[in-house]
Amino acid sequence: MHLNFPTAGPITGWPVLSITTERDAAYRAIAASLPDMVVTVFDEELTVRIVEGGGLVAALPGAAYEGRPVAELLDPACREDVLKRYRLALAGGRSEFAYASAATGRQYGVTVCPLDTGPSGERLGLAVWHDVTERNEVHRRLQHLADHDALTGLLNRRRFEQEVEHHLTLCRRYGARGAVLLIDVDHFKYVNDTLGHSAGDELIIQIADALHSRLRESDLLARLGGDEFAVLLPQVDEAGAQLVARSLVEDLRGYARAHRDGPLRPVTASIGVAVVGAGRLSADELMTQADLAMYDAKEAGRDQHAVYRDEDVHGAAEPTGGIRTRLRWLDMVQAALDEDRFVLHGQPIVDLATGRTHGHELLLRMLGDDEQLIPPNAFLPVAERFGLIPAVDRWVIDKAIGLAADQGSRFSINLSAKSLSQPDLVTFIADHIGAAGVDPSVLTFEITETAAMTNIALARTFAEGLHDLGCRLSLDDFGAGFGTFSYLKHLPFDEVKIDGEFVSGCTHSSFDQMVIDAVVRMAAALGKTTVAEFTRDRETAELLRGAGVTYAQGFYLGRPGPLPADDAITVHTLKQ
Image (cartoon, rainbow, N blue to C red; front, top):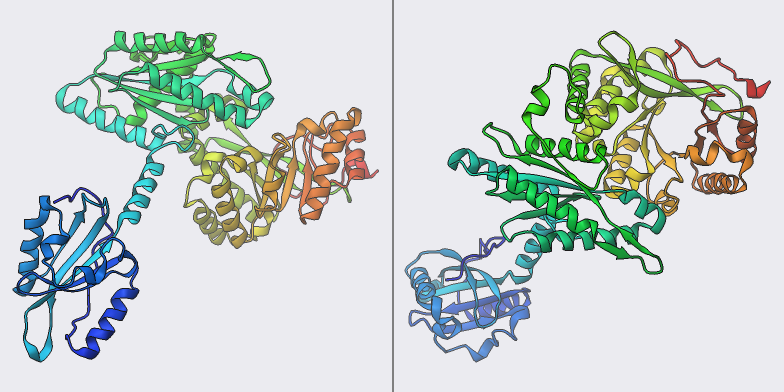
């Protein structure tokens, strides 16, 4: 029998029927109305008494089979096994099995059981054939989507990491070798920014095809997201892995694509190589090693590969190389989380209509070994890159809610894109709000336009969850992409934060002024407030107020610093 396909399970609990005139008529009517099913009644001679097919009459033409042997309904290859199950039903047994028809290509879940005939005592059996072909195909497609990148059809990050973990298990058991390559396309953002996202997608597809054509059949290629690819090379040593990496760099260097109406644009890539060693690494650790090496390749000038070696980390008394530096930052971030060595500063957000401080945007700093304040651009990229940023975000949320409870102030909290993918984040926020007894409306959570655009479904789920709590949401850096205005009407945001690029020089740029005016009008039409970043002087503040911007922040209105005990009465000079 062909049992190698999944089913949702056969029909169970079929009612016991007596074959009487009235019941027979009712039975036929019910069976004929059931979609995707074939119902047969058979006797001791394994002859078909009744066939009703619902929507499957074309496949099994009902009365044409009545009075003929059951065997004629079955494929020869599995006929005897199915007939045994029919005989078992006549003896009082029940069986459930999967059946694939070689003749029609259809797939079924089948239940065979005895049929009560009432006073007549005649032994009859009932077989219910449930067509699960379409259901199995949907299941197959969903499974494919769960394991593959939608754009390129390659394995996605989740499935790739599973394959790497499986390979590492084999390495530990049998001493097998292997390596992981992490491939990052150089200057990909330039393509998206200058030619648009559709051109970027075309480039990613072509690079995926180029990589796939240059690898062995046994190698596994995946797209991790954005412009990042990864390769698992089984059964190679460091020399072999370097040979492949060098070849891919050279092949991509000579590879170019043509935009529809533009010039050829050269493609280069930076590749990090991590080789399976003697230690018991996890897939995540091996991927991190390849990631660190890839950044070394980028810092060395791009368009080349670099190899992670353990001696690069432990072979010198002082950390001097790129890999060692990034690992030191990772250790520092983890220590700051463990030892509570982060500090929150605030930058005033000013109500342009009144000149009063409306609240503060919270900005993160880290305490170094000598208690100096380390700015976020020194450590947040490493935390973001290597998976610590969700924990950092939760530290900020916890402290912010505590500050709001202590001071009764309004705070805006920045969240990373990776935090949006954590299904329990809203619950985490709700629990801390409840424990602190704080008014949720004083908390505004900011996510960037890019994060919302990239994860629109996640952003919507998160936004709706926070709205249910009573918190506010802000779309940060709005206008940076300037292609996502339509998203706003589909996302429950309360405010949009105009990207500082349009604010810093707006007093001298008519284009920037038009952008600000467009954002303000759109936000007002949607019932949302606006915030302008990078307000550097009085002239800019006055222009923003005249344009109808609700709030502003920037060095003119207040630099980031330790939070005051009470900001409610602070009045800024734009009202004087």
